[in-house]
Image 1: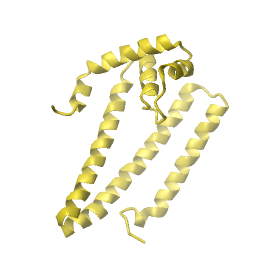
Image 2 (image 1 turned 90 degrees about the vertical axis):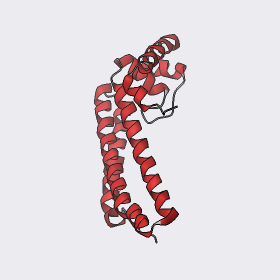
Image 3 (image 1 turned 90 degrees about the horizontal axis):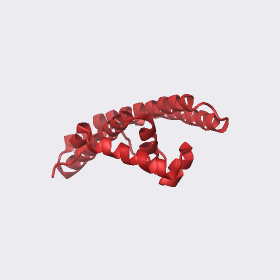
Image 4 (image 1 turned 180 degrees about the horizontal axis):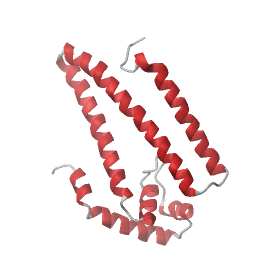
Length: 165
């Protein structure tokens, strides 16, 4: 069996992931029991933060073990491991920044944009599905999406995330 960066802390990771799994089951129960939206969202945020903490720890272990080991060996494998780590860091940073920008939208627009583009961790929804889920018409969902996208298009923070031409 291969040794990976997380191997020394495998049990710790498994315990943390089991606790997160319990949080997600609790979320399912809250939805099933028709709990208040904000209470559910608070718990989603807690589960997301816990999962992000696991991701950061795994990345740190990967850098300290897999990347460092490959760098010591040198050659093409080292370059590929370094590129993998750079991509993982860039993807995580981009996702965090996009979510932060979307959070600045007015609540109705943020909800529509989050559902339409799968920013909640679920599959992206159609306008019709979004409207049904939010209790608004498809046309209202379309208008809110258009307003939100217009605000995002004007966002200097989002402009900074676009790749250079």
